[in-house]
Image 1: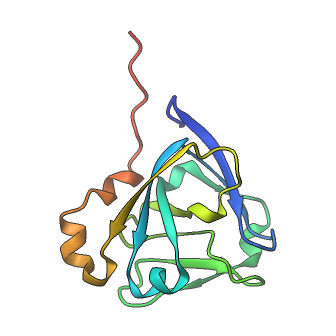
Image 2: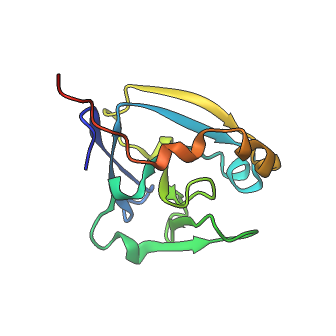
Image 3: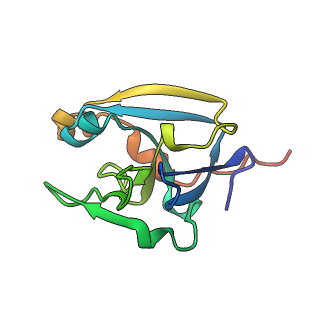
Length: 143
């Protein structure tokens, strides 16, 4: 279920075969990660609970997945154009990381950029709050 301040963000890959929608606030926290994969791809992403993400019908047919290391992160990308518009991050296996640059214009009002030290992942993760971003947010209580 969407929180009261959630909007529907839509996005996808370069060729358009992979399309998705996600419910999240118009103001998000995006992570600039320096791990070997994200830094090579230049990926900056924000995390939503998996229940707030929907892949468009047929889009899964154009996806392939790459894993490495612990195989917890599922780096999905389009088989045709190669763009990773979303993936399942190691930090939030119960969530989906959406690539900021792959969100269609018009719904992101503000992006706060934070740095994730993926090269020193265990130490960084232990002191970060990133795992909270895939947890459902409570809707504000009515007064």
